[in-house]
Length: 50
Ligand SMILES: [Zn+2]
Image (cartoon, rainbow, N blue to C red; front, side, top):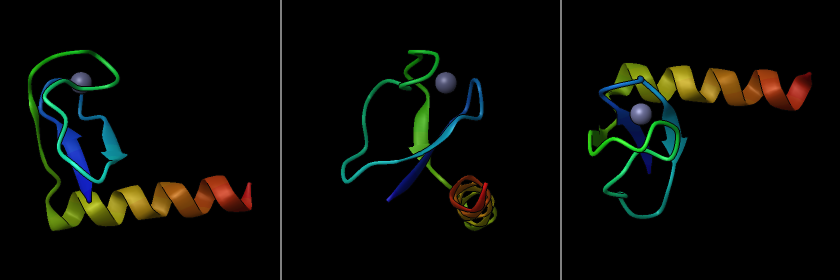
């Protein structure tokens, strides 16, 4: 599953939703929206191709 942080907008993949953002440490993690999931997958492709 893809999650997003409301504070810093960090997108990341986890099997379970963590309480804290792995980037900024705030308790503001929520499920990513459809648009955010697509954004995450685009970043992943760029990373793999780069
Ligand atoms: Zn964050």
